[in-house]
Length: 206
Image 1 (cartoon, rainbow, N blue to C red):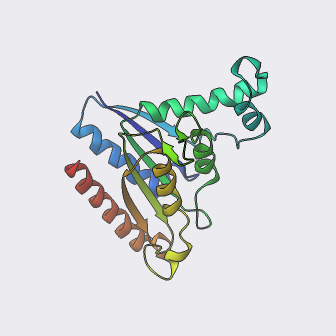
Image 2 (image 1 turned 120 degrees about the horizontal axis):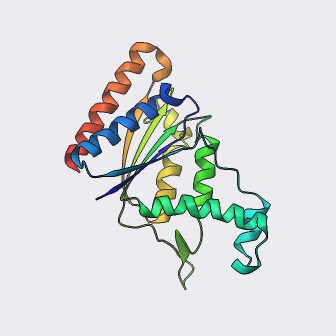
Image 3 (image 1 turned 90 degrees about the vertical axis):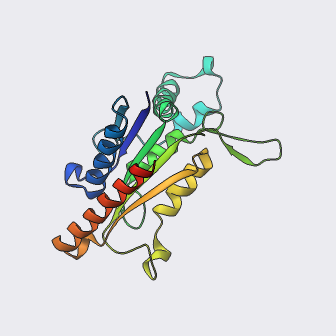
């Protein structure tokens, strides 16, 4: 039995294009593997806190010497990391906000990027991802067209997500784009339909 982790981040809920396509992708993955177990982490409905003093200071404190606040902060981080480590497939729905990620998705990444748990540095000082052997899908929606010039230069969404996944050891990554939705209902429908078709192709090839 495989495990699928679906990470949602849009504040628009089910009206979100990235959410709609990501959920459809997961349904297709389940159809191909009926025994797959799905865990949904909705960052808009239950936003993880921004990392703060307790989180940062707790990282450097021995486990048995941590304060109540430090333990609480790291316990939440550990729970998010455990979901990632348990997953065979990770589907991230990312809505572009101001050329980048939602703050909740950034906070999720801050919580799961933990030295000693999801990455480490070698004796030579090189980073080594510890989250290996997983497949990831990024479903990204954006109002404009950022997959080509001139807007590609200010796309801080996909490059960052690809980098962080790779940093953690996840290098088998597929991207599904939903672009140009700001240009009206017809353009939005065309973009969603194209994304759903690409999702079907990727699932068939998986």
